[in-house]
Length: 208
Image (cartoon, rainbow, N blue to C red):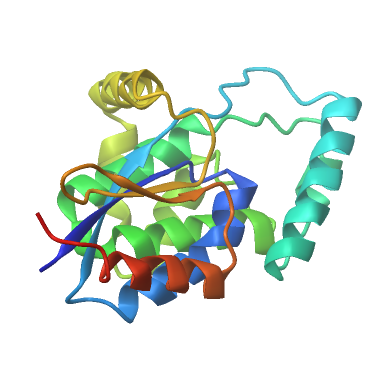
């Protein structure tokens, strides 16, 4: 029996970046046991460059995530005076891949995260998001079309609202849609070994 995993994330959430390697590995090891459904939550919708105190906070936060997850971070992007931390373009791009190439969405999500956090690439820019899609064999055209369509912005806003209505305010959140009621697998970052153990425990639950 296959269990659906509802994964709520944001592509520019640092804890989601730290969580992704463990999740991708766990899912790959359990292809006949679990299937992931990705929902996108809101994070930042800035329209002005970040202030110095905001950058200081992020540098400290990303250091904590790196220490907890062992994932590499390059904070040089925060040295820019004009960097606007808007997570909506990346979310729209990930949603477009999910809706048209669901088999590639986790790969694309991880590639966007690595581009931003590891490689110091500005994934608020449509051209960068399209390039990442090309590099992951998805195709730049899909992203260019999605980000050029105002309807995808409206759809993302509705999805963000639906996630908030579920009471989910932190990412990553991973919920197994088990019967008779869902099972919370992760609320926030969980190390790979602990995540694998939590998923294995799903198989020991009584079936109804």
